[in-house]
Length: 496
Image (cartoon, helix red, strand yellow):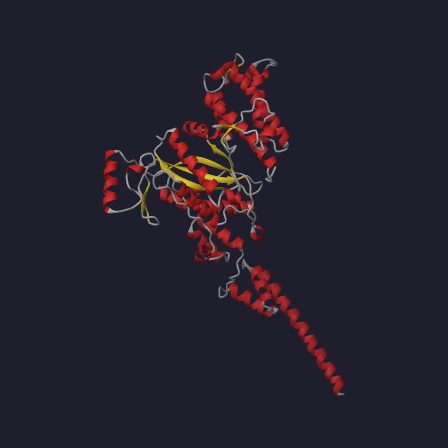
């Protein structure tokens, strides 16, 4: 009899246990269905790792819905999302998202932030200042590739990009270096701006009144970016104020300083790879400076690129001592030529006058030998490689080579009546650099635009002073790095 009672009690206990479990799971399912709590996955994951029962999970979920329990186990993507919000929209939205979506608080996000400190140049750019910015970027992990546990240091080719931004003309005090900022580099060395005392402030004020010292109207930003299939991010390494009176010798000095800093830094070329080229937007003074620096030598016969490029008849092999070249932004050049076509004088193509008013009539006629046909073929050879992703690298290079031969013939026949000399030089430099870069990828282990917009997205003001720009530069580098790791978060740009 006792044995039967024991068996009966055991079955009853087992039944109650199973029923309780089923009831607990029903409560859990109902709690999830009725809840709009944003972090259910993290809450359940933590509870399971701590061996909590279904009833404990339901209780925690009820407390979380009531605002009495908050999950603190965040992933790196949650910190990255809050850093984007703080940089692009500000602390108010970050606070709202932290409360509404259970994201990290502002203080917690700052503790997990790796924003590099980019300092602007006090007077004329020096190698030391650029080295400090490179070191700051290295310490923040900016030059590494990959995401999560797969972040690695990988050697690859790099390039410098240079452009200007308008500034609010005002001096600023840099407390981190006890220095005065905001002066144009052309004449900033005339005063002692590296140390703030009553005497140096009076001297700077007197120099501003006399005109021997000038407030910066624009800031030159030089950034570095690596050649990569997935992680294309530009990191600022130089910020310097200017008043747009600098000659080519002055520009050549700070460009050379940037090249020297990258090649000599233990956190630069030695660790991440060599600099392959310097690019610009086609500014006339900078064009001359880059020509001075990066066409001073002819590609050496012992260089690994020489067997690949020497057989391309007509290719300009001018470069610097390390085979670095210059390039111009192709979008600027395409826009320049489109504007040239719309100008009232038009242009000459092998003795034929081409005017935008005549284009509609000319295109309707069957003209096999008219200059408009040659012009159309030239434009097609030049533009198609940048617009047709289905083209192979060989097809792209073939098309650009044809464009290069075409525009040399057209320029030789009509000179500046076909296009300005500056455009001729820039397009030639662009095509030449593409061939050099393709050759670089072939002989190395390597594969085979946008931070200026991020600076402006960080608040509603159009212009910033140089200290604000330096603060944004570090944040912009971090924002670009996050978007590179999460391309699905980036809507991209809506213009060419």
